[in-house]
Length: 131
Length: 267
Image (cartoon, rainbow over all chains, first blue to last red; front, side):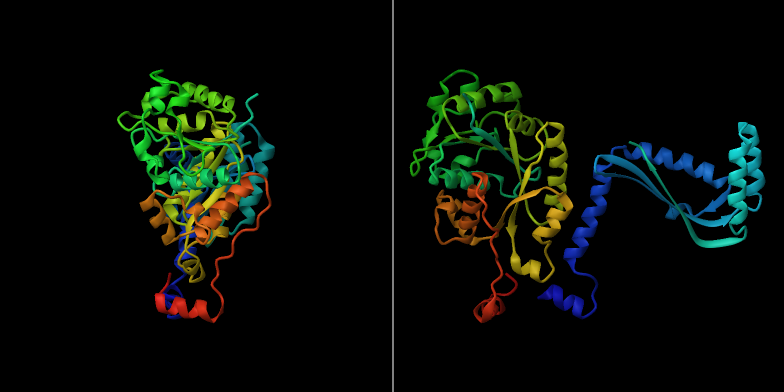
């Protein structure tokens, strides 16, 4: 009755839904196969690479492991504030240094196609299956 | 040949109703003619005896058996109402380390040898040695939870630990459901809990004043024909025996139900 009234009067979602959503989030962490400290280190290193090419909203970056049906996926949501203007050149140089011009070319092309000025709200979502 | 089913009743969190569930399922199964042994694995915090009303008849306990101060048969307490129901009480003055998983396994195979068709183990709360002991000899697991965030989170942890202990496909009992709160969307529904835990549903037990009464008296509610929770436990017992029993509907529809709800508030 009170729950209904609350919602009727516009006092937010039903606590049943809040409970469910909070549980789902906390269980994602609980079920994670990788300890928080390792996850944090991965986050720092991934950020370092990305930051060479794009400006990132660090506080909004999300990195989680998700387990489903026997496989584990790494899910990253990286909000991009701005692509660096010299990203194509940096990528080409990095590719040369790595001795793989073909792959470098592909990266450079992609970066060139992206708007080099402000791109607020843009996000890169990556998914990589581990097993 | 030992063929009795060994089911551990567990939850992770304390106070969700493991002991009450063990007592009631044991009693209900015995009423249906099964030869049942209940094993209280909560050493140091024994309560199954109290819920069954057998607390005054304890002479020996599980640790006495393990340390060979008595024979297994001497420690088994026969229920006063159902002679085919026995209890092996926990020790009250020892701790969880008084028994090892190996000893537990031996004990259980001895019980199986005595011809018990169902051996139900009341697991202590927590995930430490008590949990490891209680699950050691089990071949099936029942997880008891309440539709409440902390109980569900702990249940999820237990699912993972059971899997690691090779106890796969546990089934779920959602205990202390308050249907009207679910209807008002102030309590998670059975479907919500099941969606989160993603394990097979074995039963739904409503929150029921009759349980408080029955605990007070040491008479499991499953003996009460009229109690809704007793009905729920009897249904679960039937499902354990392989029967298909539809889940209870708790909605108090109709005018009388609505008036009652109006007069009594949210419950």
